[in-house]
Length: 200
Image (cartoon, rainbow, N blue to C red; front, side, top):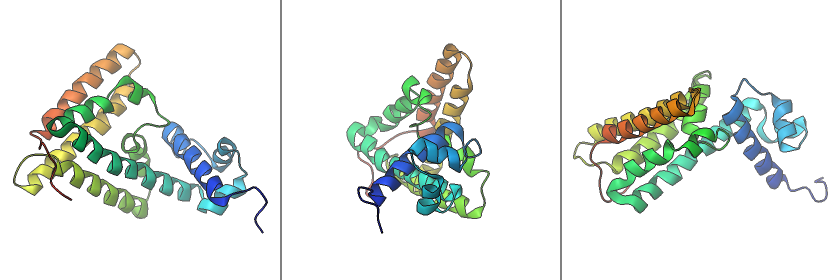
């Protein structure tokens, strides 16, 4: 019987939001189920009830985080047209985004964690990233799809790796220097863009 006043879906959403921030900030190994529960204001049993395990919670956080990119990337393309890569790259490397570990892009925060998992998580990650690359490639100019996808991979990889390096810098000056260089490198890696992306 459901306890009065307790909405299961609301609790699940609360736990997932908290877990997302925790994994992005502390990494998978840096926290346990008890920490996830305490951060969300629930019992450890609620974590197991909703996700089965800490890994189950991470799986959902990863999927949802990459879906955010899948949703947001077309918005940059539609809003900025041929300047979408420049705008996306500069947003990605802004100081506010670099410092926001809890709510920063899942591609940067969670990719290093995926490396430590097995085939199932790797497969789920790859499928989402392939979608992201497809979206990015549709916004790039060029007749050869394989070549556009290669440039999309390059652009995304520059940004994902670059923000990690920038975050690791001790001084703000060094972090800003890295960020500026990476934003420009990502634009160069992407090459010429389309005013309107190809339909999906």
